[in-house]
Length: 164
Ligand code: ADP
Image (cartoon, rainbow, N blue to C red; front, side, top):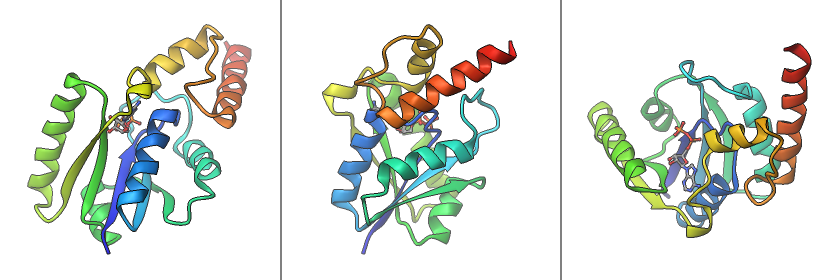
């Protein structure tokens, strides 16, 4: 039984992420979608909020679990019996970044393999940073993020506007 981890920031989760998760869960017996607590980034949602959104979206998938992780991803994988790290790639720059990350993770734990899944062409322009920018101008997010995520972004933007 091969278990996989799909780590990311998911700030916010998009249809691009969901597509990778659906494909990964059809290959691997179990997939842990892991919200990596990354303190460097300027996030819109807290890690707990991102986990809650993902749990709503993935509730119907019995072989997908959502978890928070504030350790190295390779350590999370080892502790949960996962041999594979799944990552998505949209473009050549994504590939260069993911390739270097995979080499680094291989150095940290040679027993864990990274598998890259190329984006579905429908989603190759979707990135969380662009979605946040679009949301700040009240742009239409349907087609990019699921309705629960669009509603959470709208609410968050209103909160931000009220405090500034
Ligand atoms: P990180 O901050 O770790 O890059 P992200 O949440 O931005 O986390 O992305 C998590 C993973 O999902 C990455 O491997 C990223 O390349 C992939 N990904 C993000 N958007 C898409 C998309 N539209 N299609 C395919 N893969 C994607």
